[in-house]
Length: 184
Image 1 (cartoon, rainbow, N blue to C red):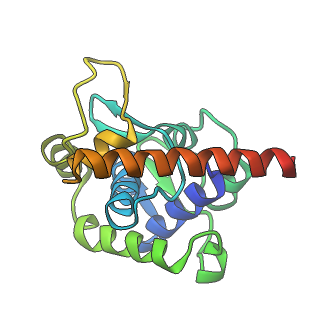
Image 2 (cartoon, one colour; image 1 turned 180 degrees about the vertical axis):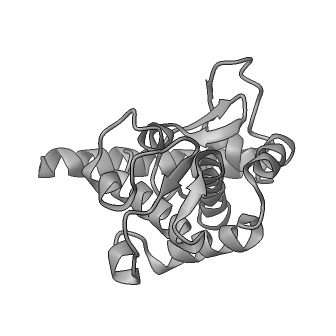
């Protein structure tokens, strides 16, 4: 189940590291790489967003909708201004307390991705995700889902490990959905 609050806080953390604004394409690539790195290190995603292959590389589907203004979210709008041209801006400075939905381990993943990729522009990130993210496949102008199992395989996990991690992710999403139903 997609966790909008976490996606918004991930974006806010990256925008803060960038000095308050980022190119939209760069932000979407960085957010994807954060989720991919979380899967590599911890076997789980942070926001549980759906991963998809698009012409300019892999992205997080629902987070892309938030970035493009195609989906409304109070959590997103709390941190991020409406997209203007090709830029997204932070509404205000954020502190660690503002990012309370993100654990320290998740914040470490964000920090590591920023250290490795923060100095790259959007086109370098597009090239990197095309060349180095084996789960991406050219959708021929459309979009294609990227199953978590394919990400785990691209990250070097064995077929058995990828199966197990995929099952654990699906079980966690099911459990989260049950909890949501109980709360709602």
